Length: 459
Ligand SMILES: Cc1cc2nc3c(=O)[nH]c(=O)nc-3n(C[C@H](O)[C@H](O)[C@H](O)COP(=O)(O)OP(=O)(O)OC[C@H]3O[C@@H](n4cnc5c(N)ncnc54)[C@H](O)[C@@H]3O)c2cc1C
Image (cartoon, rainbow, N blue to C red; front, side, top):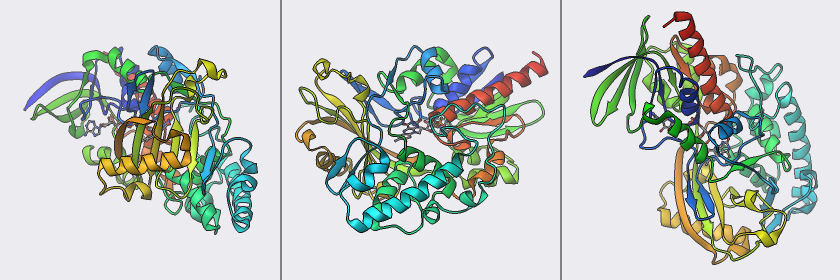
């Protein structure tokens, strides 16, 4: 077994959290080890003519958010999303525009379901207000932590219960609608915390006009840009096997080309999903180990499709469509940010992304890609009939660890989860409200803590 010289820092995991950490440490001697043969993790896209196919993260928040700043630094072009963000399809009818409050009167529902949706909507709005206390736009916002993570005073009871308990009983048609919102976040309302569901599903529900951006070419433009800057400081195809530490520094075991190597460094950022961090890091304190064990990821099955229309489509002005009562949970019009107000300037073709989340994704586990393709195309055609015969190239991606939605009791473990352990810093979307902005920020915060420590240590 070979041992390396001692680096200033090692980063384990080349998703956006690890890349952001390594980029922030670039002035020092840093090396990033990634298990896969590519970096980007759950940011995954590919070009398709004038468009791009999204198979992972696809929406960015405001222009002053951490991801938007990384986009600027890497020369990636942000494109404002023009389209409606909260269209809903249920029982054969697509409700496309207008206020979410008007949906109970416009969706195709029975009278009982309409009344139940009004009741549930009021309950959700009140819970969302409570969960939002002290927190600005939690998922795609620009909260800046003054070196610490937020605690939410008075949110105990919401966080202690499931989202299903907070919402209370509802009509099956309303259940199908709310479930689509939860499945978008890879969870079921019974498994998700009331705090998380109220804040995030409630936020999505009322976010028809929120500020959001795509990146030209897809978010992979940002991860590719960071990777290009880091050059040969990134080692792909090198899974970490174990990470220990002593007074001097950290000791990382990796597998490279079928051989085990030991890498020495003064500090480490572990930016893998929580179960990998739990398995790799030696001698974790009990509360930290329990916190990592608490983190649950829900699955997604995603299909991205190029479309072959020759001119404008009726859904050009939509971005996100929640689908109730089908296997597909969400359909996104990835090309929306390229559509100007003037339809005549519209290029031919397009790109859609459709996915099933949580239990609906689990039900697809035994299906072949061809079966999934046929099912998804059928459901896209049902929701957007004008796409019939126009779905071209497709790509399927299964994410087993798609998204770390919060389970009840999550706020109680926030400190243990985010806290460094000696010379090892933890980064990734699971240490916060999960999405790319917080993931990038957690990597940058870990890097800053290491830069501060290195400055104090000297050398
Ligand atoms: C379908 C889908 C849609 C989404 N949509 C959005 C969206 O629109 N907007 C948004 O902001 N977020 C979205 N998200 C969430 C977003 O993708 C994640 O929050 C974010 O990308 C997580 O980044 P990360 O670096 O924490 O983790 P990851 O991207 O999972 O990176 C972890 C890395 O660690 C590597 N690794 C694992 N084990 C080892 C090991 N032993 N050694 C070395 N490396 C290892 C992995 O290969 C991976 O590259 C979406 C996610 C999915 C799946």
